[in-house]
Image (cartoon, rainbow, N blue to C red):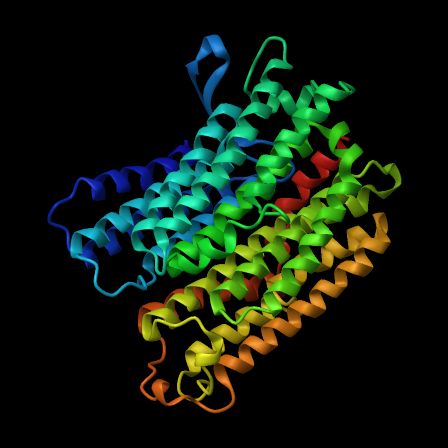
Length: 499
């Protein structure tokens, strides 16, 4: 029941705001923050009630929906889903509480903005909590609607164009995913959309061409969402034109649906097929790691640079998943380590890049500029902004003691045991990432200060309060990750051990 509460509260909150006529923007903001926080609290309760030594899926709720098709409202979590869902709920609280980087929208427009954020939270959590394939697809598709309106209505630059490109591109991936889901459904006898049954029975094992086509359709749809090179072209402009909080959700939550979907669907349900193509997927992930870092290094636009680092970091995650899927029986420990690292990378990237995109919103709110050449010398004038940006940047480049290092160390340790040459090349991506973030910090905060930044204000209370919570999570995971690893490792062991 607790997972249903986590889904229902933000959805009911969105409906309440959508139907309101007299709410002030501030009242709507605090109401939405409260609703998002209650959803987060429900997931924290589920976390404390989760037994890592118990069955794979726990806190299961199931209600028949369309019995003739084997469709039901099924929700439940393993350690991987619970970790990613809890991070997502926290990031939604942060995004809603953070000031919107928009200057002249009418009061009612702000109210609808918070309604769409709550709607998007409910749909996003539904993706991570669903145990029914059709329900998973419904939630997966509806997230596009929420993000489309957040970019198109409250974005900057050419938001309608960016929102349309985002929607059409990712919707095409969703259609490929739907075809694959139908293929999985038809492979069971009797037919069912129950993910637990598909994971247990592996219905497409040894099915040759049919299994390969289903696997290809699944990976195509999920690779667009992740996004992997060369299916990434919708992402940078969507980030640049989206408001800061929406960018934080896009990078911190929606991209995780691609990598989480890889674990939950092809990795768990098509073990033979994934093992067959694991090396090819690992190579594609390596391309994303190096390409994303190199292109990010060449960007003069602050937001576009951080957007390309997301392609780089999602490459690390996919690399960990591909390594975990490899069919080498003598490397079980390494493959479990890689899958655990991939999950920790999803959590760490959500917190780190979520914070960085919120910071981008603060820059836009003050200057209306993302051009790095228009900044400089802000370290003394805005020490809070400088401190939070430096911490998030060092976490993103994998500095020990911060969350990014915990994830990347596990991924590369597992990769080195399975595909050592991929690990060696992948380390180059970390070096380039360090260069691009150090260059970013130099351009923003050091050197001479332009005259138009003389009155540049530091973070206000709401901004530094939200960033303090996110950076606390980054530091805690970096220093004392046991609470997170214990949750994830049990599920990783079951999924890898079942191969």
